[in-house]
Image 1 (cartoon, protein in one colour):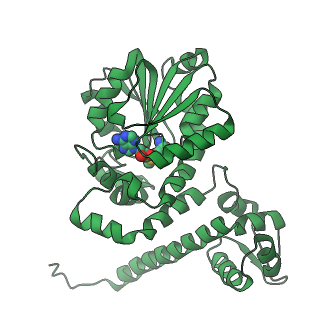
Image 2 (image 1 turned 30 degrees about the vertical axis):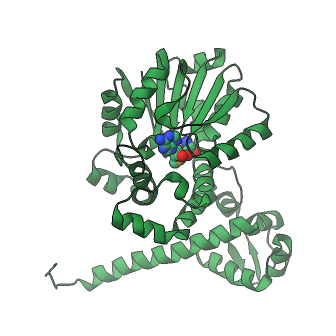
Length: 356
Ligand SMILES: C[S@@+](CC[C@H](N)C(=O)[O-])C[C@H]1O[C@@H](n2cnc3c(N)ncnc32)[C@H](O)[C@@H]1O
């Protein structure tokens, strides 16, 4: 028991202020989610400055609840209120963050992912207490769509223009026509980006979560992509080989046996094939990462709720977590037998490793 009874009240108040701010923020997340799912932000973006009545009509929601919701949003700076006209509006910046799907600044995927965790909080507590694994498929479906929406802007902004060009000789091979495996592909965003950009290449996308593959197939069909095939398959048992490029996007740390899986991937690559591993941004060393990586707290939270339990639900159950840091990740890739391993690219949200 901590016997130090000397409480510094200023420090208590500062801490209380931080927590109060987080509590207000967590309610704001729920408000944001409601606005996203009901189309209120999109209606506001369309209308410009407008009365509560006009916004309610455009979004087809209840006017009284909307009034309360708008006031809550205005208090957090998510929307603007003009006391003279009594109208509410979104600035271009607020619209970019809350209303415009597909813009790199749109935060709604992350919001959706967070809300998905609160939906099954009883499961999270049970997992935490018992130490049992929690398979990816046991999460609320918000987790799958939210993850895809959260990661999509980073992939759309960096994969084709920075990450693939950073791999030795890979872009040239993909342009000419190469065979690619996207493993742990989720809803297939990265697979579709590569299939669209490199029509001479064939992309095989694998994930062991059947509902994600069903949704990915639907999305790819809507785009009319013919050089992309999806398979329900565990990463440890990929049924094809001869790949020039194998990639894992934000999923390697979720796997129970990342080293064993990397060894298997070495076997399905051609002799001079490349393994590309994209992982969330992290710094080496726990203290360094906590102090100097502004996203670390969020990612350790996701690690507690999603990534470590997902890994522990699989054979070996290493529980690497999403913040292992570049040194550890490169050591693991080397221990899988790759001769050359390097950090090929780095963006605000991701680390990109090349192993050959
Ligand atoms: C955080 S999501 C990332 C999905 C996708 N790569 C993306 O970036 O949007 C992790 C994905 O890895 C998949 N996954 C985890 N372990 C797997 C395994 N052993 N074999 C195949 N897929 C796996 C999950 O089903 C999930 O779709």
